[in-house]
Amino acid sequence: MEKVVSSELWKTVLCKNVIRIDFQGGNKYCRNNNCQCDELDIPFENLFEFYAHIFSIFDRMNTEYLASYLIDNFDQFNIHFDSVNKTIERYEDAFYFLEADELSMSKDLFKDIKMILQDSTTTQLLLVKLFSLLIAIDRLFGKLIQERPVEELYTLFPHVTSSGILVHKIPSSVQENFHDIENELTTESLNDPNESIVYQHIRNVTSISIELSYDSRFVKLQEKYNQPLSEKRLEEISIGFIPIELEFKNYQFDRDNKTENLESFNVKHFKSSHYSESLINKFVTLLKSNSDFIISSELNTELKVQNRLKDELKKENYMTSLIFPGTFHVRGNEVDLESLFNNSYINYSQTLTCKGETLGNVIKTNPYKEIFNGVEKVENISPGREIIFYDTHLGRIAVLICADLLNDNLIYTITRCGTNIVFVMAMHSNPSGGQFEDYIHKLGNVSKSIVIICNYPLPKDNSQSNVVTKYVYLPSKGIKPWKSCSHEIEVKKMGDILKKHCKN
Image (cartoon, rainbow, N blue to C red; front, top):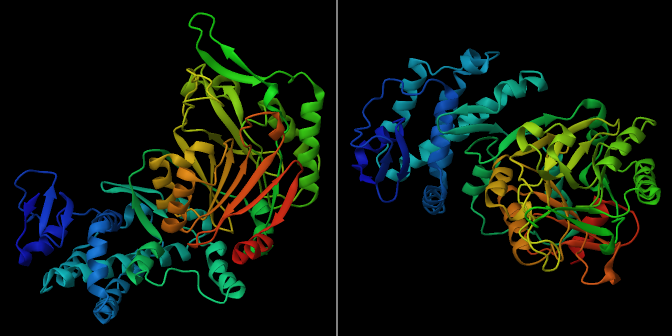
């Protein structure tokens, strides 16, 4: 870190070589040693580069510093934001209908940005103006998107910059409805009264810059699957849960003949028609109930059954938007993923539409360290490296498998990508306590995500076989999760779950 004279800090902010700035301490860290931060002749090629650069400045430390200042000086933000926003609005017409690579940083725009920042008399005031720029440019991006067909959002974002990948959040009826529902069902607000308005602004910014440890893909749900969701409020959405079809005694383990290491495990009676018939019938029952989403647990649905379900879906006109049929171990070459996984196993599920189309693959990112109760680790399970986000009228949806909820990098990706609902197919003794609960709360606090889990609790004996537990976590603090445990299929409306939450 290198000390910066406060009067020169505005130049540091506009230096593309800066990696990190500590506003309170007056320190900077640049990519190049002895960087003078004086090469200010339009250092940013386009508006995306500049936006991602200033977004990265608002790390936790600088955001806390800004928040502490604005507690007693919030009028400063209102004054400067109005001025900054008017400056940025002057360039709206010039940017309309341009392609992403044409949103260049003009000399006039960069001159105006310099004028905004350089007359800051204090570091706090500089940070306020920078924060105002962040929100004003984010609003400009939002207006540019509104002028285009929805499909063109995916030509602008995600956008790769030198400071990270810019991702744009999508409108979410989940978030729009949730606050109103809380107020209807409770006599007092469930929001943290001490939450700073600065953090609300940061969370509500729709364009976000992220460094991704996982490949991320954004899929726009086709309108024929999306339309049923557009006509419903959050409390009207229904979720169908599929119970486990297997018993603990049905699982068997495969060993490598040479090394004696466990490679994977499968089910003894896959050749039995009862397993597949019973499971398919449960899916069909839920499909006929017009559940909006259907989910099963981890290690419940063998690949042949997933594929048979696809065939079944093509026979009728069902209304379900997305189906997460449950996972099982498959070899990479069985699902046309041999280029990524060769001949090793993956813990795998498809994401299906009600027409039997595969929208994406769900692959567990965390290989097992231990199987069930004390069984040694499996050697030949490969972790996934991609997460797919499904953009719907409800909001952005992600799908995980069990212990992926404990993956810091994956949770970071989910929270930063503006995820509104997270579905989890799990197989765990208690996904409602310990680390699981900590990470779920982290999701709720940071991204305001609703987390929906369909879980097969690992049985210590056969007494728990065929039981599935369901959990729904809401993002509000201090509310216990909705939980249900049964052997049967179950359809729950979010409105009933919300009422149960608020009673707790």
